[in-house]
Image 1 (cartoon, rainbow, N blue to C red):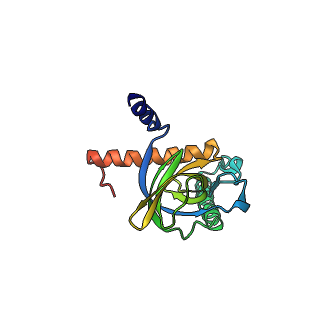
Image 2 (cartoon, rainbow, N blue to C red):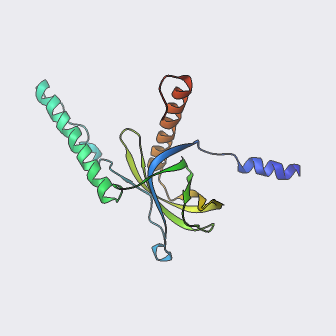
Image 3 (spheres, rainbow, N blue to C red):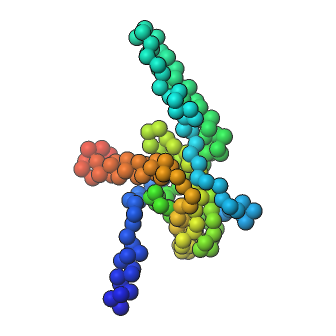
Length: 185
């Protein structure tokens, strides 16, 4: 019995923090024809990082204008990428997310081991749209819905870091709200 309790404690150790949030989110079960799954993708990020900063210009007023135009163009490019990725009309849903996985409520059940695609927008600065793939680790019926837990698959460190950054920003908001510095929504 003691060994069993120890194993349960080991299973509950988490590598990354997780946070509850209402986020634009959609999921779908991947068909067998989609195997192997593509790698996770980040949408709305500048494609050419070497062009993300402008060279210094002698005229200060012109420099301010060019930087403003550059910022607006970046925002437009980000919105186009998000639109092309199919993120523009995602409904907001409650999720719990960490850099390793997430859980959420779904109308349809999915068996353990099922592969799923997840599209989600993380509200950080700037907002980040992510297309992730995961394996269902558990499915529990709750009323007329199913609570699915996914473990993310084939995600690079850059995307994982974006999720970690989002989780930490959200945790900071929660801590500030508890201290009374800011009203938490």
